[in-house]
Image 1: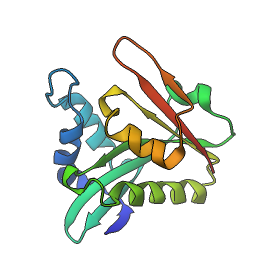
Image 2 (image 1 turned 60 degrees about the horizontal axis):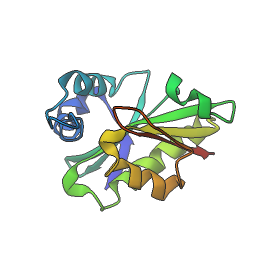
Image 3 (image 1 turned 120 degrees about the vertical axis):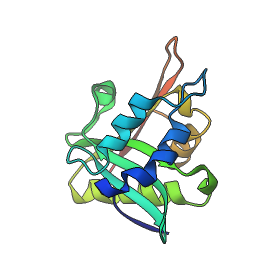
Image 4 (image 1 turned 135 degrees about the vertical axis):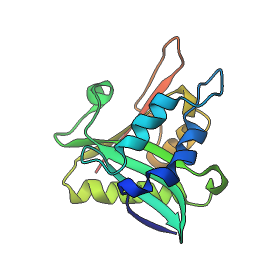
Length: 158
């Protein structure tokens, strides 16, 4: 497995991976507007994405960006960044793809002089992303409770 910066020409290969994960919690249907926004951000200057591949097969993606307003209350340092768009091909779960991508994101954050990483994950990913981030960064710093479901936030000071 290799990891490299994602490019705009990776978008088509990432589409089925993102569509697998970005679905309504109740309906199970793909959320096309959200998928389009995520795919459209790959290769954009606003969000740096790492892409994992195995020869010619795309295995996953993870992004690094400025913190969204929702995570700002949990910032503890002066140069934070937020991890976004963490998606791994479901057939590759448990094979280290997520760890490879998270390592690349962490190295990029350090190289760009970021002081901490924040991850915010909604109820859609409670059974997939939450265990990954808890194993990597420990217990969430908060779990926000809402009618639409719980959202967890993790923090890692670099």
